[in-house]
Length: 133
Image (tube, rainbow, N blue to C red; front, top):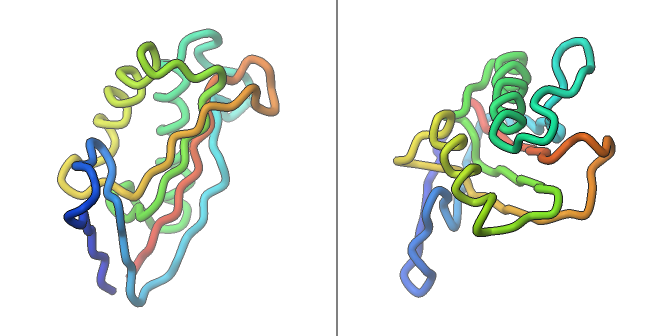
């Protein structure tokens, strides 16, 4: 399997993501959006974006491992943030992401502000796609 990260000239220099990721061969794994629920279905970190993101990434780690994958196998990530404020939220998101995603070859990524999620106590949801050998 071959995964290639491309940041073509003519596009802005990305910070924390890659503009284009190609994957040839391998098995594709789609992980449903994960939220800040613990194994008992309880909200973790109510009102705290950083705490919720940490739980989301821990949930993603478990889901990826179930398919034999890690964060290094990610090719695409989509993040949904309730009432997104770039000035307030981007630094928090970047700090938590950096604890889980390698800076050298981050996945293609989309960040979307949304009005709400399925549970009003949830502030963030992250879905990912990974490709394995």
